[in-house]
Length: 244
Image 1: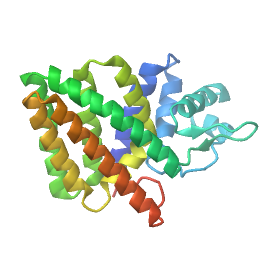
Image 2: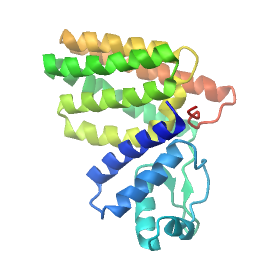
Image 3: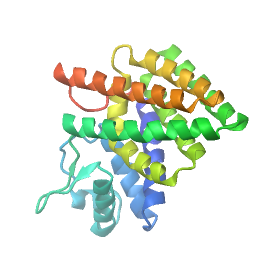
Image 4: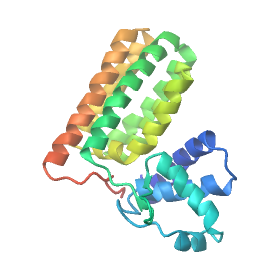
């Protein structure tokens, strides 16, 4: 997947969540999705100043929609709004990552058990179709495409679960973790292992094995967190790797 394609995927996901969660004029979610996507993709580096004058000029608007867009991104964990200072792109800390993974593990374990209890043949077929594309991404050695397909896979899971509260928490964590998830999948061995985890998960769903599905989801998230922790301990920066 190219940089442009990955950026477009980030815009789509961010716009969907921001537009669903916040009732604002259409210009505000568009600005938020474009700035947010550039932060996720590393085009705007962590800690970079977000000058509202420059952004207003870029979007040919007043500063008010820009400020509202940055406020939305602050609420979703992509922008920091320090008092009496310029907004900046969020800088991940390892503690942030651990807390997000811990919360995400619990939420996704719950979602997995609910999917196993609710999924019918049609829902299983939808997930298996995504698996086909994920296998192709693994064969190409394309962790960026795989990550976005995994995002789509989990979007389907949250719909199947029917748990609206879990979906709201999932969406918030998704935006906060987009860059880190890309980074986790890029770690040695994680692409193949994540593929296998998804395959086993669908098998558990197909068999209605709720306890097994929850256990697979939990183990996968713990392994991802540990991969990030090891990477960080070895001096790695907590930013998404660039797409080709």
